[in-house]
Structure formats: structure tokens, C-alpha cells
Length: 163
Image (cartoon, rainbow, N blue to C red; front, side, top):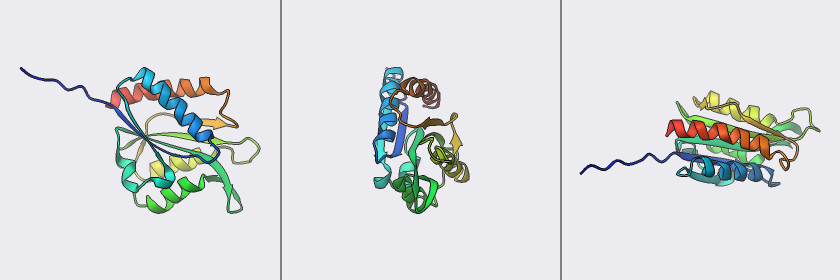
């Protein structure tokens, strides 16, 4: 008697959040995904604890960061994500890796949500493939749950098809 194993899709999330806004968006995405893809395996790692090899885990990788104004220049990634991608994972190879991006920012600054662009540049320059258009959240994420849910719905479809 044969046995068929169902494939369990997996999502690896590496997120940098200091104010809680990125965590809020990632939590909403995770909750929605688990309702649409009940068997999805989701792992969330904080950028400050992530290692380069964590980028390769899971069927799909999700990188999430707010935009910061550090070191005298605006439009940077959260310092934890910056240290992770630019230092500890600078030589990472993402060849063929399916990646989703969430970038947050504040409309008061010229480079609003620039972290999204920087994350996309990292993925492309390291050989990864953007799975869908990135989610860009401007200003507080509270009250933007519909936009988050709509994006997460597209992500759920992509995860299901890449398991």
C-alpha cells in the first residue's frame, strides 16, 4: 500500500522592527496566510538574529523592514536589516530564490519607504527573484489592513504554487 505525502509550503520571514510597525504588518500577513494556506509553515526571524544561511530556508523568503534615517542620511533600511544584509549576508547567493518584500516608511520624508527599494536591489543583485510586486506601507500601518490582506492574498497564491 503506497503513501502519498502532501507538500507543505514554507515561508521564511526575516524582519526588522523597532517601533512595532513592521511586526504588525508581518503578523497580519502571517495570520491571513494561515487562513488561506492552512498547512503553510511560517518561520519568523528577527534580522538582528538572522544568519546568511537563513535567507535560503523555506520555499519562499519574505524580507520586511521599515525605512530609517540613520547616519545623517534618510532612506536607509532599519539598522538591524542593514547590518544583516550589508555585513553578515553581504556574500549570500540567492540564485533562483523566490522572494517577497515588505517596505514601510513615513510620508514626511523625501525617500518614503526607500527600504522597499533597497530590499529589492539586494534580492536582484544576489540572484533572487521577486515573486510579486512588493508591499509598500506608508505611514502607520494601523487602518491599512485591507491593503495588507489584499497583498497577502496574492502571496498565498504564489506560496501555494511554489510548494
